[in-house]
Length: 118
Image: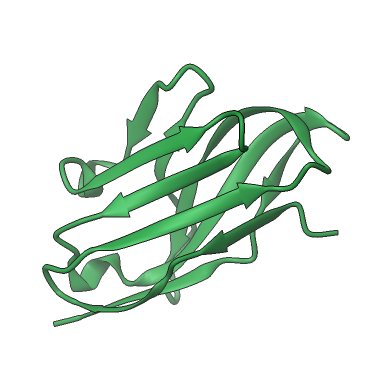
């Protein structure tokens, strides 16, 4: 069963912008933190940004000042606005939702490709 779905990836030139969206289905609830990881080829999956239900945010140093995470708790959605994109931002971006039900777990999306050309 698909619990988390991302959208909004694509190809953009360096310096451009993209906005990623993620929606958690009603099959999971009591969602705590939501956010984004990314994984480039041959690399490990790293945290990009996260946001709590209270709106507290956390960013990787490499994206601070360029990326902004936001969420809508009522809709169980989270967004990642990415500005001033660099070729090194190229990766598959995965959305996650840390939820308590149906079981306490981290639920992942299938990933969306972001490619930044130089």
